[in-house]
Image (cartoon, rainbow, N blue to C red):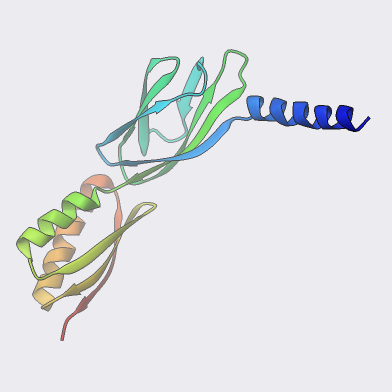
Length: 159
């Protein structure tokens, strides 16, 4: 009797694992892309907000996801029986690494950090002068205009 109960529990667990959709988060930069491998072939793939991210389906097992503007949306993939095989949160953020290089090149003494958030960027750290702070603000504002993101400026002036 004990073996039968264990077998039923194991079978139920295995059945749930096989049929459960994959839940995940995919992070991609604005203007960047990621190849996503599906756990099994999809018949239908769609994205909730194509203004945030878009997809290119080249085969039933692979999807190319690319960032359009800062924000979050959801990707869904269904099999031929309309069962969900993947549901993923798509998080699109500004390319802060590139922006950081530009700022470091223009203001070598700066010590600024960036944190991407849904729909924008938080900038923190220190610069030497109010003019340096204004330069950082202008660079980030300019970069975020093209991505539709907002800026939260938390920079401090040294001294």
